[in-house]
Amino acid sequence: MLLETIRGPEDLKKLNQDQIHTLCDEIRQELIRTVSQNGGHLASNLGIVELTLALHRVFDFQRDKIIFDVGHQTYVHKMITGRLNRFGTLRQYDGLSGFPKRDESPYDCFETGHASTSISAALGMARARDFRGEDHAVIALIGDGALTGGMCYEALNDAGNAGTRMIVLLNDNEMSIARNVGALSSRLTNLRVSSKWQNTKLAVRRFRRIPVIGEPVYHVMHAAKTMMKTALVKGDSIGFFETLGFEYFGPIDGHDVAGLEKTLRKAKEFNGPCVIHVKTKKGFGYEKAEERPEIFHGTPPFLVETGDRAEKPECHSSGHIMAETLMEMAETDSRIVAVTAAMPLGTGLDHFAEKYPERMVDVGIAEEHAATMAAGMAAGGMRPYFAVYNTFFQRCYDQMIHDVAMQKLPVVFLLDRSGIGGEDGKTHHGLFDFAATLPVPGIRVLAPADARELKHMLRWTLSQDDPVVIRYARSGESVPGRKDEKFRPGVWQQILRGKDAALLCVGTMVRHGMTAAKLLGERGISVSVYNCSTVKPLDEETLRKIGNTPFYTLEEHMQTGGFGSFVCEKCAKLSLRRPDICFGVADIYLQHGRHDLLMKDAGLTPEQIAESILYRMEAQQQKGAVLER
Image (cartoon, rainbow, N blue to C red; front, side, top):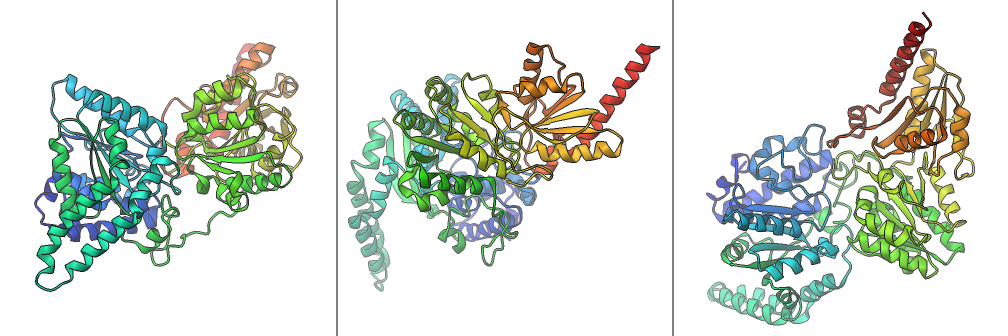
């Protein structure tokens, strides 16, 4: 295989165009093979193969800098920068990350996992270059979906005003995760579907087929077509970017390596900020991904022949249960509206949209805007439910405080994928929400033990007028032994009774706490287990009832600022015994990998919890015996 001979980007520059086309085919085969086994982001990487090769043939990214936005489309980049022999470990524990990592390769100059950050980072790197008197190129590679995020416009405005030399490479594939929304997306779409533009392209292609004279005349007509395109788009994309101070190149075919290289070389020599508008097709080269790019944006392992998942999909995830419950509530309450930030499929709200399309608002990749817009809707008499991945909730921290909580508006934040995120790694773990929300006055913070309790919580939110945060894991697996009873805010549910110790568990840790209690029981330790589904306000009555019994807090969250810390503060204030151990994630960034392996790294498996408690109790007994002597 030609791909196996590519040890680094320098090898690409030795290939002719025919060899490059062969290499593109081989790269796509490797992408499909690996992602079908490991899961990952397939459609975006299939669409960016030619563009990645062209970039590495024109630039030297040991010297030049490229920042990928969002970062999930770096698989091809990894293959051709000396990591092909490890590509089979993609997204596996101790394997290659699915995103850029500075400690993984010198070709990864900046880490990205959240959208809309690349232009700001690139501008910062370009300014650092100028301050240091250096002369390398700086490129931000960003999809049109990420341009729905407001941070991009702050950066574009600053860069255009400053006139800093940098390249913004706009990979226009008509969608991010779901179909794009917004005015700029509409402008780009208008260009793509312009009847004059499409008819011109068709005429040029037909002329090429004429024997003898067709091929040479085609090149002349192709140049004329490009001029016509420029005339048609003037005032749309060109006008938009030139108004901001950028030189505009494009739009150009993102699957034409020779054409890409020609444009990239022009941009490389341009002494100022410029935009290269590249048109690609998401999922290109794999029919299943081309037909349903949103399914193959981020996919679990699948069967290449059919595109079906290798394992049966989870039918009753927390997101699906949330959406079904919200639909039931919406039948009798016309105030309910669902909000998402480009994640209808991931959060389950695509189901809600099918039934209530007029009451589903997708704002694009703009969590800050979504939060404040939800506040405005609540102030206007509606009941907005903002479903967002926990890790992306971090992006609307100020809006949550300033626009929602301070005004005591009934916005419900539904934090999906809470806890340790798995194969997507450190940029996607949902481990900071308690630290962000617990200090905020007037906001209720809830964590259901399973999807059944989530349903009860959702229905309860309509009975009160305060802002609420509900954090839940992807899996809605039921907790064995827990009664499916009506949710009682501020009251912790005792699932298991014991006399020697108590486990105060939050969310997913209720299930792990039950297993740990069983293991301790086998060692002669009788343990109570509490489902602490109301994190704020805490259940002071239960804390008093525990009294002097040893107790432990369990959470899938950072230890600092988490549930355990909150309990410690409350116990100190009430002059009560404090937790003996607060189980949670230590002051580290967890890597990527299977959830069970990362839980072990965090010390949060039932076996580790039981052993730690046993060791602590034995140490306390020995200390008590010494004091008695």
